[in-house]
Amino acid sequence: MKDIRNPPLLGVLGGMGPLAAADFLTKLAEETPATRDQDHVPYVAWGVPQIPERPAAILGRGESPLPQMLRGIAALKQAGAQAVAIACNTAHYWHEDLQREGGLPILHIADAACDLLAERGITGGNIGLIGTEGTLRAGFFQQRFAARGLGCIASSPVDQQRLVLPAIAAVKANDLAQAHTLAVQAVLRLHEAGARAVVLACTETPLAIDHAPSAATPLCIDATRALARACVSWYRHAAAAGDGRIP
Amino acid sequence: MKDIRNPPLLGVLGGMGPLAAADFLTKLAEETPATRDQDHVPYVAWGVPQIPERPAAILGRGESPLPQMLRGIAALKQAGAQAVAIACNTAHYWHEDLQREGGLPILHIADAACDLLAERGITGGNIGLIGTEGTLRAGFFQQRFAARGLGCIASSPVDQQRLVLPAIAAVKANDLAQAHTLAVQAVLRLHEAGARAVVLACTETPLAIDHAPSAATPLCIDATRALARACVSWYRHAAAAGDGRIP
Image 1 (spheres, rainbow over the protein chains, first blue to last red):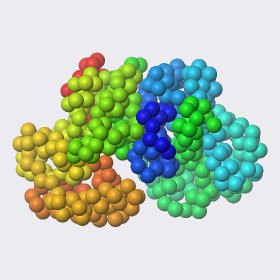
Image 2: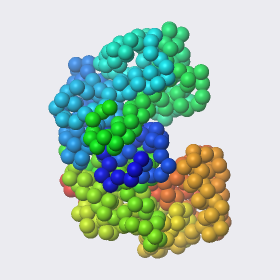
Image 3: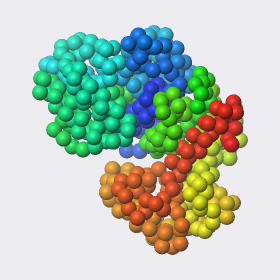
């Protein structure tokens, strides 16, 4: 990549989960083929967690976070961002509204996950989906899988309660050993139910799975890492084309 | 902390080391006493790594990074930041210039490290200092130690070459086991030379030390974590006082 003084700038909308944006930015650096600091993707990140809870809003039980998210997009745009990545799976429920009202192209984490599935040669069959209640109910992963001819298997309500949600809670409580045991079981249960691969569509479960190698590791697609890879592609394309369009 | 719609906003100047800002933001979340997402410190982060190398500039062998850093501060200020943290030890060489020309108060990582030493009851004697050549030559840690009545012991040139720099290189190459062995030795050598505590004044060595428990662990102060703690204090003070001054 050539040395450029005014490279394309990626906007990162964070603050939804206190660690989600830092996790995304770490993966952004890890996924960048770089031989020196200057090869990395330049970003501006908005991490303001004073924003209404997303799952409650999706379930129709709380205030909409949309105005606060739009405020973040406006700040990113004013700072010079040419495209936006949202470091939160659940928040993609508002992707269309944010893109239309925010005036910047926004990469989609479910498109990124589908691209990574295709890169791995998975273009048919059923895909497992692990996420919060909000993400599962929002339906955008399932819709994007379907648009690519992929079926979707979510955890059963029983497994969601006894494996997925406790795994997420264990990560938040920094008990990675316990989280790992639960998350691996959740992935393997989806595999037994017919999933060829499993998309980890919440920030916490990749930390649980990555804690140690297991039979689940080769089955998993980390949606956050997929989004980071999509951002690296966007950056390389934008730097070459001189604009911020999503390729 | 009360629920506030327009909380004080912390600016984070990153991009100096592709992972340094993500590491700082992780520690900022970890050091925040929070019972819910909304208790965390709101930030805007500028992570543009297309900036001249800092060590070369300090050693008088390269272009100054100051104009690019000031561009970052200007973006943070325009986005609403009321104070700035710089997620890079070496870059504090330009702290005074940045604060004067940037027009925002900037927390200082060496002040933060001194505060954490004092919190641990260390108010005299010699402090070990582990950092890059640029940070050691810049002298701001040594000066701030002296202002608090603390002496400073840096690694010998031989130890710098055979332990500190290889430990940093091993972290960058993701060989944490090797990095750990080297960094622990570097810390214990400073302790043998009379250091009561050792400040880890580069982004990489805390990762090496934290890889496993060792005799070095209780001796170490992570400067990045100290800066994160100072930012949490700043935020609590600013939220209460209604302005962005550094307490």
